[in-house]
Image 1 (tube, rainbow, N blue to C red):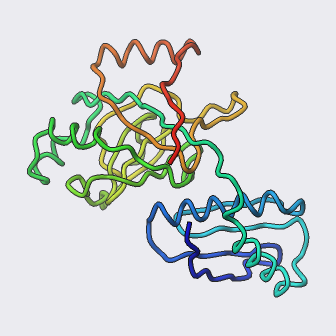
Image 2: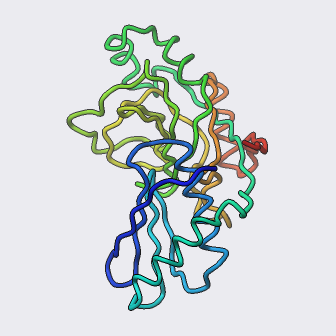
Image 3: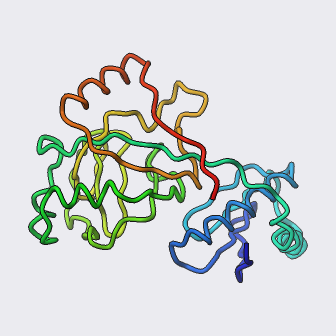
Length: 243
């Protein structure tokens, strides 16, 4: 794994912001996760560490008085990060019903993109999407890998309420709304599973570095899976991957 040219900035009195080249890139994500793992392994004074597409925010449990020395230690860790083993990753297979009852904007996308609705579904379910990070809402997975044929602008006027489980497209991204919320993405289906459950030890089943693959189900299958989910007995299909 190659090293990138990073920038280090103070972020308040207790945090340091580290930035990579500003783009969505899987090699940058893997580099961030490797560095994050290295930092967590070598420090017991970190309050919190978060990452986004191309940045890492480290928050310490003390005021940073030796910023320069702290950055030099981080730079040294970054140069040694490849010695740390990456955690295992999973491929999660997510059922989605693309029926017109749920696919509020599918017809609009079909007309605008000059694709049939079935072509959109086929293109949407073909890739394995990379989870870059979780944010916006608890359990909202930021995914990379949407086919350029399905890139479509977000709505100029967001809806005030989007149904839990709505599968949508916004710009060059696709994702699933884990709970009811406002939102401006274009809805093409719905998934009956829980993407965030506060009662579980791991409320969100997926993590950065995992992959997601959607597969199409009928309305009857949707109803059956939803009943199993509500009963707490549905087992989400997954497999361990190494890449």
